[in-house]
Amino acid sequence: MSAAFPFAAIVGQDEMKTAMILTAIDPGIGGVLVFGDRGTGKSTAVRALSGLLPPLEMVENCPVNSARPGDVPDWARAGTAMVSRPTPVVDLPLGVTEDRVTGALDIEAALTRGEKAFQPGLLARANRGYLYIDEINLLEDHVVDLLLDVAQSGENVVEREGLSIRHAARFVLVGSGNPEEGELRPQLLDRFGLSVEVVSPTEIDDRIEVVKRRDRFDRDPDGFARDWADAQDALRVRIVAARAALPDTTASDATLRDCAALCIALGSDGLRGELTLLRAARALAAFDGVPEATRDHVRRVAPMALRHRLRRDPLDEAGSTSRVARAAEEVLA
Image (cartoon, rainbow, N blue to C red; front, top):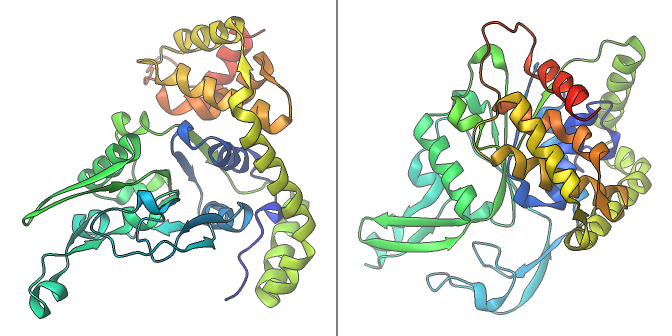
């Protein structure tokens, strides 16, 4: 199988890459929503994550990638042997049915053996990894609602056709789309942890570098991957170290006050904004190798944590990113 495009080789798009890295350090931050022009590396960045993250230890033949034999669901037919596999990154296609997502009755087993067996869906395959939806703004609303509910609870429950099935479904939901093709409902936007905006490079040198790297990769994927192996390894080491340091990474009351003051200034509904700000700032501090999240970390993650939580203001023509930057300048000066 050909190598994936190296994450470290992606030119620019620093905010998108940072958001992906933060969710790799702390999946509890929530999903990532990536909106932007076509051909800006959205899909490439998501699929490159699998090659960047350390492999997962899982039970062999377990349909939900269980970390221990004791975690294997009763309905699954798996042994006790452990294997190492890449972190799963599962694509969810447009037009997918609910049965394909959650799983359903195994028709073949029912017809040939008379057994009432469960056929796992995409949520099972994505457990402990990433579930990626391209053109999420075109996905049917009831499927998006389902995905967000499962992503929040960490469990998939199937109660139909005489089946009563539960299994772990802990994954990072990543959605991408082009805003020209439609927007997500505000209540769905708010359920994503981070939101980033990507645009085509405007500097000629950057565009040339993007084309050179992509052309080189298309002509010799394995050789290109070898050229970037050291950079990939260095980034992987930082992520693993940040994961280990995260439980001991702190945030002072002053930093919590900064999070709350910024959300109040922007009129953010509920407390998801503060919680996401805090978790993202701590993950960034761990990635930076420092023991405490500071005002600077809050300022750096504020746009991606808050831009999609703002109410529309008909009297303010500034974009959401500009509004967050302006509020951060005033509140965190």
